[in-house]
Amino acid sequence: MINFNVPPYVGTEMKYIEEAIASHKICGDGDFTKRCTKWIEDKTKTSKALLTTSCTHATEMAALLCDIAPGDEVIMPSYTFVSTADAFVLRGATAVFVDVKKETMNMDENLIEAAITEKTKAIVPVHYAGVPCEMDKIMEIAKRHNLVVIEDAAQGIMSSYKGKPLGTIGDYGCFSFHETKNYSMGEGGALLIRNPEMVEEAEIIREKGTNRSKFFRGQIDKYTWVNAGSSYLPSELNAAYLWAQLEQAEKIYDDRMNTWNCYYDNLKELESEGKIELPYIPDECVHNAHMFYLKAKDLEERTELIDFLKAKGILAVFHYIPLHTAPAGLKFGRFHGEDKHTTKESERLLRLPLYYGIEKEKVLYICDMVREFYGK
Ligand SMILES: *Cc1c(COP(=O)(O)O)cnc(C)c1O
Image 1 (tube, rainbow, N blue to C red):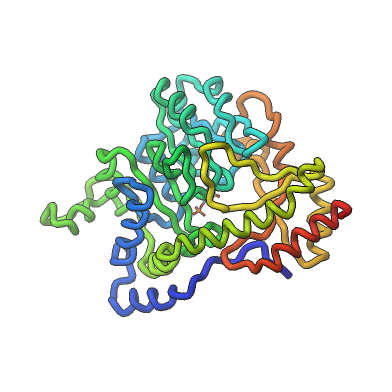
Image 2: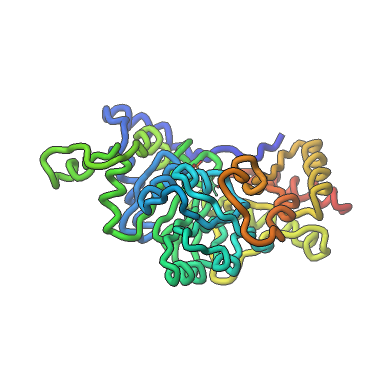
């Protein structure tokens, strides 16, 4: 069987985890967390990144930092992972879903403004498959309406929009290091903060409402409980695993990109014949090969293709039942405007296996099997 995903492993993870154990520092914010944080800050040219226990938690922190409260509305796509909405509905907000663009499956920036009401507090673009949303337009709308922008860049690390790394364009950016993402620590994430004035409050929320970070920097002589907070810092064992990956980030990136290009090159003939559709990368956008998907004609054809590939030993999967059609979506959200593409396109999309180190023969075999399905 060809797995859909295999968690990334470069080989130095065990060594670093052992180092963390030997240093007698396995709780959060030790040496490995510092290294990872610095790497993220350098790589994204952001002044502040905080490692978190997940992207969901990074988004929750962002919701706390912009004081999302019951009655507020937050605009986001419906075609996304539940965490995008969870972080806000947990604070009592309503998720207002707008339709996606067919080409990228990203929220249609032209539909955002009509969804804004006096209750709207934030816009949450999701960079689907690591392909950037139209951030210039989104930032312009947010500025005009005085809204916060929180980028769900869970899939977007190492991607960029007009030269700017994803996660650094909005007020907050959220990364994921889940085992299914390009770089992993099992479960984990990061919060990127653009406004330096918000950093102290973020550190306090992350450290159980204490000013412990300031204490460790020697800026105060004792630490105390100063605000409501939680515990959003990952253990050093997880950070050690992540450090191994970040150290080899380029290698992982290149490997995934080769796989992505191999899929693209071998399937584009089917696309030009109108049998399938392939991902589209807008100009001035650099993606990170997070995902390779194709779109079948419809739900029925996709189901047949999944079964066909399974019989050939290939696990291909789809995802995201549009949130507005899910039980919690009906309870906590509403769809603004017409669902022209979200449901229809979600039923056509199929993800092919893509993970660090997948052998080229496997990728070629998968392409052959897809071509065979379409009568080639
Ligand atoms: C993976 C993912 C998340 C959640 O990430 P976790 O680190 O598992 O919390 C959120 N949003 C999107 C778009 C994702 O793909």
